[in-house]
Length: 182
Image (cartoon, rainbow, N blue to C red; front, top):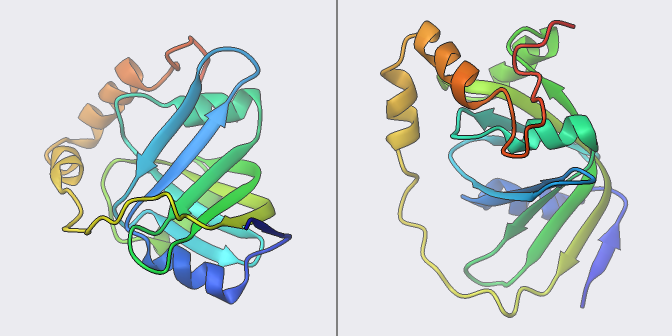
């Protein structure tokens, strides 16, 4: 039932664009595995071999910490309606922070969203599809607005203070490089 591809096909790109939620998984050689659901308008297909994800301010910063330790990530999309499908993207990443020229270039691909702390570009080495027959039917109602409203109510200084308190280290104590100078 599973099939593997070296790059995204048009049907995969269209499927990604239609999904209101995706899941990001990372792991360092030691410590916890991180698996996070992502939503809002935070994913872009760049080409057949890369996607870009806008990482918004959150209670932790596990993905960035893990990628510094082991530069591999899996992104999973799945259909909650017909036709059933699970799509996984495997690859290595580049992380861009607001201090980086690439961040300033790529952030223009997204709607203005306060609290964007990183952009993560996945260089795809494998695309895998599987049936999704065991995934339940679910109806998408709407994106939550609370995170955007929370960030919008903060000044830039308050966001940086939050990042300093909550986003510099992973729960395993790994650095995230959110403030690192390159």
